[in-house]
Amino acid sequence: MDLPHEVPIFSLPAELRNSIYDKAFQGDLSNADSLALMRASKQLHVEAGSHFYANNPFVIKLPCLGVPGATVLPPINDRYLPFLKDVGIEIDAGCAIRPRVQEIATAIQTLTTIGANFDNISFLIQFPPELSLFLQDRYDDSILDESHPITTALDQLLNSGVSKFVQIWMNGTWFAPGVATKMKACHGSRLKFMDLNEEHNLIELSNPTLYEKALAGCCSCTSLKLFGTDGDDGEDLNTAIGVDLDLIEHILDLNTNHSEPFPNVDDDTDTKNEEVLHDEDDVDMEDALIPLDPGEADAIVENWNHTSSLLADVEKLTQEIEFLVVMAPHMLSPSPETAGMVAAAHLAGTMTAQ
Image (cartoon, rainbow, N blue to C red; front, side, top):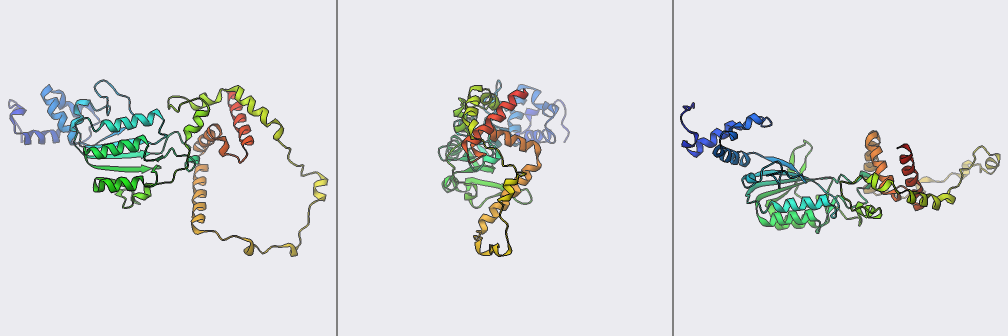
């Protein structure tokens, strides 16, 4: 219906004004011109803006730097937070002591104080950016136990009742054993654990234990403390760890006398002592082999497939190896002395190249 220009929009019933706002905010909203209606007047800015934020989903990555007027979920202005209904929040897991993780927990807790009445809040909890995939099963960075700041913040959010539904999707992350099960038992249908099916559609998991994993007992921050850093993401780990020349010299001195030369395969004395095997020396391998559990076989195949895909990505492989050499040399070799030499040689070579 075409309206006469002289008819003020605020003389129309609220239902008609909302219909106008719906039409105005349809389509691509990435262009600032699509939101020009909110700049027509202060009164339109308040009413149209509240309608806009209440009727559109928003996805925010935490933590994010606050800006003037938007301190909780930038770039959404604080004045519009009470109107939000559907919010998606993307976060990265990590050690509980990391400032980044604590900022995320604080932001989640703040959602209970902004005066909003959400229809749905969705959380995507991603793999920790500080953790190497090689160490996923050895460190607990990607596992949220019951005392973890993010777990505590999620419990507080659920207990507050500020959202009708809360969805949690874990991507390379887990809760500690019993945590997801307990959360589901406490909050019932209000809490939904989500995952992608084969068609890449989000579906609800019927078994929350699929998002639970046993703890290994240590985290990557344990290694960081050895080098005098608190795990703040703003610090370059290679810089923090790789400049201690005294440490490198000490490691090299400790391992100078532990290396042994490889045997000379061309030496006649070696070939003289080789034993000659005959047919009667063959061993019945079927009797000697130990039966392999099907679960162990599947795990071996899965590890091989994972390693194969990683080896195919040269850039990622280089990043993973550098992380291991710098952060966890003891994981590369059963011998601590040998691991120390490898780490020291790598660091010394890096600084020489620089």
